[in-house]
Every structure is written in C-alpha cells, then in structure tokens.
Length: 232
Image (cartoon, rainbow, N blue to C red; front, side, top):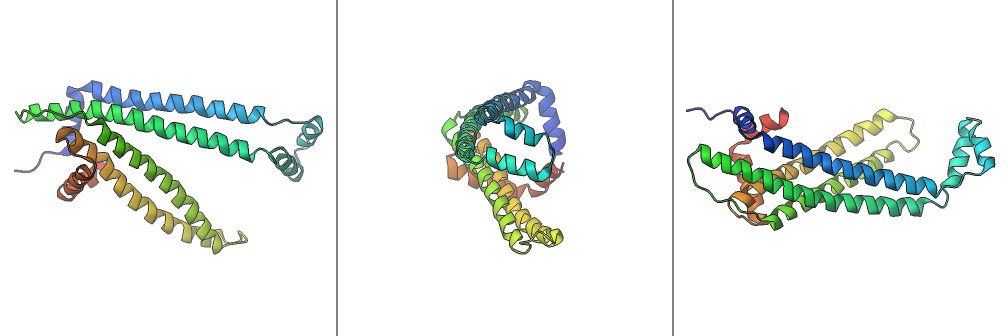
C-alpha cells in the first residue's frame, strides 16, 4: 500500500482543526507586533540623541554626497556606543521573547495535532507538556540564527580578501556565495531537526538529546516526504 501523501494529510488536519492555523498565525503576528514596537522605540531613542546644528542642517541641504558623508560622520562620531547598546537590548529582548512565545505556542498547537493524529488511527495517547525541553530547543534555534548572521559576516570578510579594492565584484561573489551557501545548508539542516524535535518531546516525553535523535531518525526514514514538503 502506498503511503498517504503528507500534503493531503496536512491539509486534512488543518480542515479539521482550523484553530491550529489561526493560532500559528496569531502568535507570529504577536511577536512581529512587539518586535516592531521595540524597533521603533530604539530608533526614536537613537534619533533623539543626535543633535543637528544649524550649520549641519545647512550643509545637508546642499545634497553634495561628500559634504553629506562628512556631516553624517560628524553626527555619528560619539553615538556608536549608544547604537551598540540599543542593538544589544533589542536583540536580547527579541531572542527571549521568541523563545517564550514559540515554546508556549509550539506546545499548544503540536499537542492538538498529536491528539488528532492519534484519534485518526484509533490510538490512545497522552501528550506531555514538557515546556522545558521545547524551550531549550527554541533556545538552540535562536542560537543558530545568531551563528548564521556570524557566518554571513565571516563569509563577507573572507570574500573581501580576494577583492580588497572593490574592483572585481564578480570575484567577491564567487567566493562569498559558496561559503555562505554551505553554512546556510548546514544550519538549515540542524534547524530542521530542532523544528521536528518538539513532536517527540510532547508525544513521548523525550528529553532534549533523545528528541533530536528521534527527529534525525524520522528525517532518515521519511527523507523523500520531508524534502518535498521543504521544497513546497
């Protein structure tokens, strides 16, 4: 017997429990709304700290690129510390906010889908809350994001070595894209395991390492279906 299509089963589950889809959308928009407010606050704080003198206002109105570059360098000369401090506050706050909201929302929606899946097969299964493991998995996902940003910067720095004067953008891209693509593929694979692992943490009560191993086993067993889903 052929295995049922994962696409069909996924859409069938959403038709049975549309609240799951609405919950997924809602918590992501909640996070996005809070993130937007926090970014606007940081931007306003930074802009208020910049004092533009009448002389600089006059120079900016010239629209001369060299003069504008000089004025901007003068305005930002002593503001980099404030910018770094605001960036640290925003990034740390959003990281912890994502971990908290994602752990709670992932636990709620995944338990509903697991219960529905058990009912469709006529099985009795008690799901586990296991917020600690799900939160740890979300923490590592956030860490992977920061590693990805660091890989982007590192790839750009390495690629800039082959094009120090900026004369050959093609050479820069030929080095940058393969380096960053390799890093992105490796990080995406681990992120995929961390995305699947909460299923086993909530279904079977597995701890962090066992949940990841179970996700790896599922990835090996159902590689074709999972690749198709990711491509879609």
